[in-house]
Amino acid sequence: KCGDDLSTISEKFQQRRQVIDIPVTPIVTTEHRSFSKTCTCGHENIGHFPTNVNGNVQYGQRIESMAAYFSVRQFMPFQRMKECFNDLFNLPLSTGTLVNLIGRMASKAIPAYNQIKENILASSVLGSDETGAKIGGKKGWFWVWQNRLNTFIVSDESRGYQVISKNFPNGLKNAILETDCLAAQLKTQAKGHQLCLAHLLREINYFIDCYHDDWSKKLKQLFIEAISFKKQIEEYTTHNPIRDKLQNRLDQLLTSGFDQQPQPIKAFHKRLIKHKESIFPFLYHTKVHFDNNASERAIRNIKVKQKVSGQFDNQVTATHFAVIRSIIDTSIKNKTNPFNNLNLTARLPY
Image 1: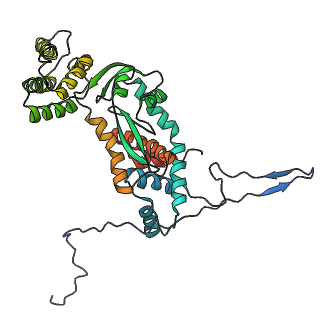
Image 2 (image 1 turned 180 degrees about the horizontal axis):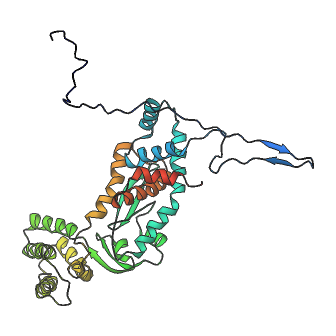
Image 3 (image 1 turned 60 degrees about the horizontal axis):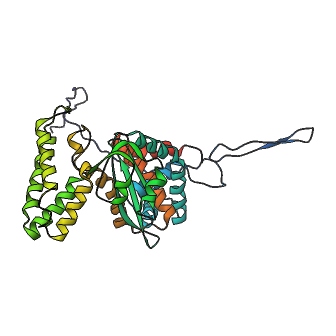
């Protein structure tokens, strides 16, 4: 302030400020050249290109990974993906190129996809669900089978049992399968079935609102107590007095009040009698859940994708989405970086 020289005076640190930014990313083109030599015997020796360098001009693994990540993980439509690549990286890509890149990624992901399927087959507890989707202007279906560490998604034209038999011809004999009441799901060969009590309670609440039905009120109370008891179980012994009482109450409710019920409740009642053994398995097995919420969360991504991006063009692109989404969701469940895993997959031969 006074104008005196400060060069000989030691400085004292005051504070630090940082600016974090992303540098402009240039596109890197790696050119491979093949040469030949002709021997004195007349034989021509030609150098080979590296594996996966198949075209005169092609896009590399990181662009392939980003296309799959943007489309399947972030649900971006193709027009927005084109805009993103062009604006951020000065890389103009056509819709056809993006479709091909995602298809290439799906093909490379098949070994990992099949491994997820094997993990599902070996699982002792599984959840499954299905949802409709518009594929090529028609109604199609996505199916999911999942557990704590794996998610296996398939796309198909049908909601019938043939989808299950096609993907799991020998059934899921190691697992107790948590599902809603879809007949195809309950027909699956499994060690056991667990009906989703969340679904059943929604139906029961409807009956209570519409008919003020006492039987429905008693069944609702029983389910609530059973769910509460599940959260308190510390040891799954052969005999548990509280669980036995809950089971006895269920048996009594299923054998009472049938003749006086309105037709919708009577049909519901018959369904519970038919699937009586699938109502309370969660009280007998540690890892079995009373609902199918995990499967509903897994299949909900299909609806989000359709809402953001519109329909799937055809069954092939729907299958590509199912394969890549299985890899991404399984990565997330195992607490690994999904983009890094896609990038590792992109290195595989095609």
